[in-house]
Image 1: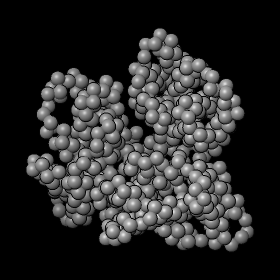
Image 2 (image 1 turned 135 degrees about the horizontal axis):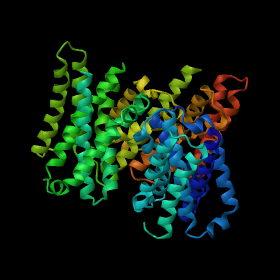
Image 3 (image 1 turned 60 degrees about the vertical axis):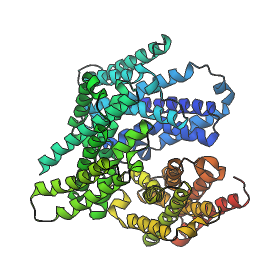
Image 4 (image 1 turned 120 degrees about the horizontal axis):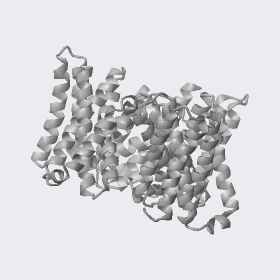
Length: 197
Length: 197
Length: 197
């Protein structure tokens, strides 16, 4: 399962880095600003998690693949700039929902794997999922999604609790990952669809 | 004495979390905003201290009691909402003075217990006492008390130095804790009373 | 060479602390504000670097000399206040260029010395060089130099890469330090001189 977690983590970084690039475009930042915003969104939440859990050095120092994934994502986005510019308003919240789902599960997983209890795991899931997007919105002077939309933090907490409960159950590891992600995506995407938030 | 430090720390978290709730109320935040502000104020300073001192993981990951104390404080506050709303303007600075006094001593104590010298202990006392309230005020878009009131940082530094001096003296442990707290409370409360600040 | 790195680091702290004092003067801060701004600029970048690399405790906790250097710098500046006030507009960017050059090399050096690869070393150089000045400018509500001036981050990255390449070469240790510093100073000072940025 460790392999799955790793690829999922990289996918989350790409998705959140892309959301950072989109917001940097809207705020008319230059390529360097894009890179900073993509990096903050992509690895900001996980960096905070590792610092608080005392994992040292933080994950992207141990494995610089994460840094290259962000650089490649930003360069590809600049090459396909016109395409990104024409994306509809719905793409950003959907990308953000995927990032939130993936990072929440990985945050909770890392805390449980270190032997911490459910309370800490849920909080680490929430912090990993929420902090990157919050940094992105604060740097681009937008109101953070987590403060603007009520079903944002709730979705992350619900998904993290689901993961904590499934973690110790004798079910297939893929289900342990898939179910909480579906909980978060279900809550966020229906909130976006029904404009509940 | 370790037990005393622990209970004092929890009392400091309650007092600072309450000050976070009061400011969240004034800024018309929702319950989630209250929880975020209470947590930032209650454990923000100690988290920064543990990160800088290299204590890992940070204290509330090792002992999630702190998180539950914050959750219970916020829920109790929401239940007793009308009571908090009617509190006079004097309650917030007084709560803040108690939090500053307790956290300053605990910050200095942790640094000395790890074998660091007086300079580092005083700075850690100041950071632990000041950072939580600063985060609270910045997030609620208020001018931080530490920058607005001259006898704020001074009181914390005076109390921390007192603790550093008493720490190695052959006096009763309760006096080692009580005297520096009285120094800080005396300076802050008389500053509030005489409107010196 | 370790001794050279140490003295260079202290020189960088003095130079960046001075730049913090100058900006605090311009923002009409009081002595406490000067101290905070000088400390943030002088040790902010290195603190972030140590936290991310997992060096614990951070460097100024291990060696409080750094704190006293900042205090002495600020007190000397207050004593020579009228002199600082009359400094021409060119002094600040030049001090900042020296700080950027020194801290970039030290950041890259610390990462390489811990056995990390080139990517991490360059990023740590950039963070150490840039973060302190960024904190200073954000706290004084100025647009950070790193976002305002294009040859700022570029100079830091170019210098860090130069150091990474020279680090494993069989050349004199002084040249390994001097060349990358000259690269950064050359780029920044000519950018200032030619108003390219």
